[in-house]
Image 1 (cartoon, rainbow, N blue to C red):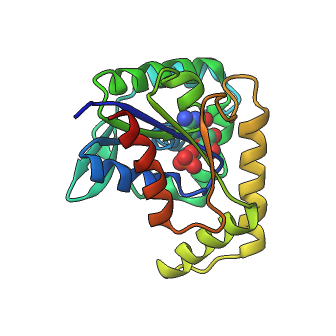
Image 2 (tube, rainbow, N blue to C red; image 1 turned 90 degrees about the vertical axis):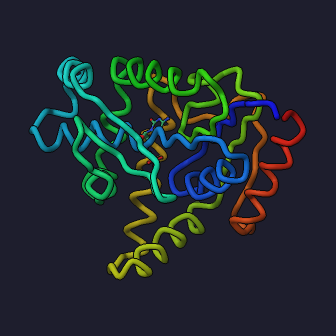
Length: 222
Ligand code: C5P
């Protein structure tokens, strides 16, 4: 079997990570969640009270920070400088601030370099915003996942309720829209579909249907 790279991009809460994990599992590939890397830096910056506008300082901090994504027992763990921050990087506070960190070109340059190292040996499913356009522009399969903002907010909302948290659907919708707007309008590697990416609207598709559609594309080139 050919080891290829599968790039999965799209707006917030479009189901990228769920589907990417499944695709990776089916193909025995490694799943790399690039959003987790930006979240990790955001968490550290917030914790150390670094201004999220200070590109130089953020880049300096990042240069001295190890971010590891380790896989075990079917779960992904994210470590910053050896500390497990898997849960900490998913808080609303980090989620609503990460786009301000991710817009800085110097931050992106270093993240992209690390991500390219991880993808070098292929056999990867990588999800994010700029994977097909900047991180792995020569990925064998490129997918752009989208869904209506109502549907994406609803999915996140139900996920929160399932975890036993309370949530405000309208507020979540606004936060998702805000994050998409910052990610799409930034100068450096904005969220955009690569010319050669296959667009999948998942609004009315199940997780399995989306997974199957991506596997079908992958199996054409594997
Ligand atoms: O994928 P996730 O929602 O965890 O990503 C969090 C944030 O990280 C995004 O909203 C975006 O600002 C940033 N990001 C990025 N480029 C990537 C992955 C994530 O700018 N490749």
